[in-house]
Image (cartoon, rainbow, N blue to C red; front, side, top):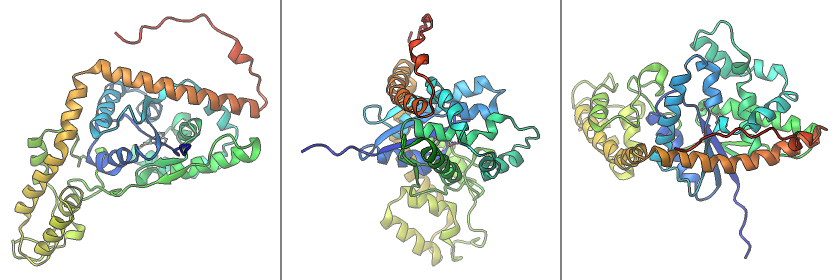
Length: 347
Ligand code: TRP
């Protein structure tokens, strides 16, 4: 029996800071769950980090390392998935230029994420890089022929723009890559300590690399139902971040218990928090241990990115070759070889 070809999944993460539990439960766990069923490509989007942090080059370098460890800690397995660094694939820049020819300015002007970022980061003079953020993202997807793109809710507009651009390209130049579709996981709205969405910019995060004690201290300060002051006050678990965390780490049966006890005033928030936090720390234990293990072996991590990059680049070259051909460009560039610069990659 011939094996059915697995569909391709592709997604990325910007290295703008260490991953927090919103990334882990909202996105990384979801990626890990797709590894067996799909042919997965996951990467660190360092070009995208440069669109806003262009003056923080060293910070990006540090965060590439941290986020790679977060992904491997979460359980991305280089034997199953192709894991690599966006900027290691020069063809991304080449296809970006070609794709820009079929990208209407208006589509980018209407991008809600662009407007939100300009406001949030108080950007007065946006650069072209930030403006074309969704173009680079489109290239990331189509260059590896990504069919499904598992992302957090905040990234949905970018995936829709990518689908739009891919359709326009197909209409003009033929069927070179699939039209991508989004996938959203089970926990897209992980709350932070103030019950807003967990986000570095709100300062309400628990990071994957935090230790158990730090996690406990942070959970202690989490928002709880303001109407529940005494233990026997009935609570409202549905709007409570601690209950949301229970649903991620405590199992269905226990959650049902927590809910009915809370609603009937039989459970206090202090007890509820420490119980949940114990389950949370237990859940994070193997992830944190795996992360620490990889952190002790930087050469192995380098090797994972190098091997992933080789595989990703092979795919990228095929796509760019086809796109150039469809757009009437010559193949001479592939024949013109420059003298090889010798790089020392792995110590
Ligand atoms: N913009 C995404 C984020 O900030 C990262 C990203 C870059 C991405 N390229 C992508 C996600 C392609 C999915 C597909 O999280």
